[in-house]
Image 1 (cartoon, rainbow, N blue to C red):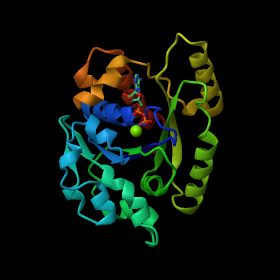
Image 2 (image 1 turned 30 degrees about the horizontal axis):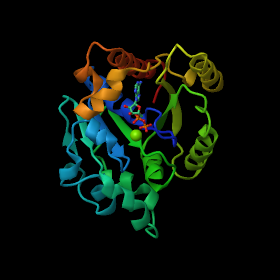
Image 3 (image 1 turned 90 degrees about the vertical axis):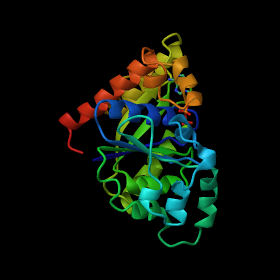
Image 4 (image 1 turned 180 degrees about the vertical axis):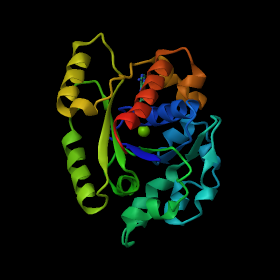
Length: 257
Ligand SMILES: Nc1ncnc2c1ncn2[C@@H]1O[C@H](COP(=O)(O)OP(=O)(O)O)[C@@H](O)[C@H]1O
Ligand SMILES: [Mg+2]
């Protein structure tokens, strides 16, 4: 089982789009996948077709009320892809848990061994490095960082790397940054290419060869509650995320996780 956080404290870089679409593509390739929504905005849950206004339980209840994992895990319309949804309630968790001992490990503890039956656990993070994200980083072993190919792409990555080092030292020795994903690429701008070169220079072999192109179908599909391979199977977006999924699977052949 691989557990991967999609992390970048910058908003709008492609974390949620990548979690939903990579998850759907991995499931389509026959893997058992669970996506966990750790952003109170719940964009991932909506993207995967969940009615977030009528949830019985969400990841909030798992963390704060310690409800059973089986009460929060939902099936999606994609075979092989489950989800633990979130909703706006999660935005209160950070404050409500102040003073709770061990509050960084509640997600991991309350999930127990419920994730063992999956091949991939993908966790969509909120755009912050606060308590919710710490809970994610104690749960997972790997981090993928989606990076938007625009001018300020690497701004803030330093802070992210600092947080990663601290978490690795104090909370989770097994944590590893194992992939950088270049998102929303347009070949039309020289800037796009410069950023690609810079990221490759900085992260070397950790950068996935697959580059996710900017594609209108990717931005349309969330409002239809579908991943792009179902919404627009013939699109660039669909092809790119399928190629990424294959590259992710390929990582296992070259490296032990
Ligand atoms: N490759 C892409 N092409 C076009 N639009 C994209 C692409 N990736 C993401 N988007 C859109 O950009 C916005 C931000 O992406 P999102 O995945 O929600 O970022 P984050 O989760 O990091 O905040 C969303 O509206 C999404 O639909
Ligand atoms: Mg998001």
